[in-house]
Image (cartoon, rainbow, N blue to C red; front, side, top):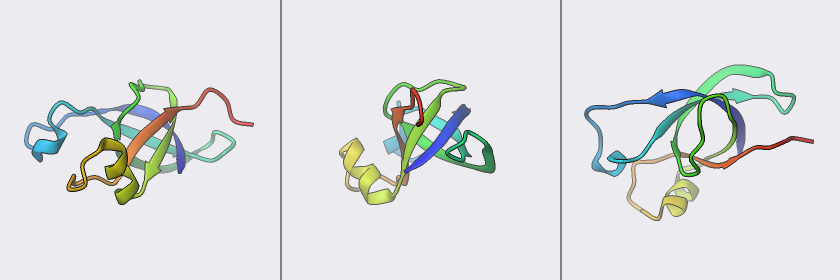
Length: 87
């Protein structure tokens, strides 16, 4: 699992049909202390997260496909939660 902060949305005009109607988020990775690491990833939003929110990301393809319920999806990362607090 990865903790990060939503930097924005990604829009794609040409993509795999799986992504139609799904929101792709750009997530800046953070340390547990909330410091940005300089790395980012793109994840499918499953919880309705928005820009600036701290989120929990599952970055493992098989688990991500299980969450969205599609075993053939070309998918690696999904946002699985919005973080209220770390501690």
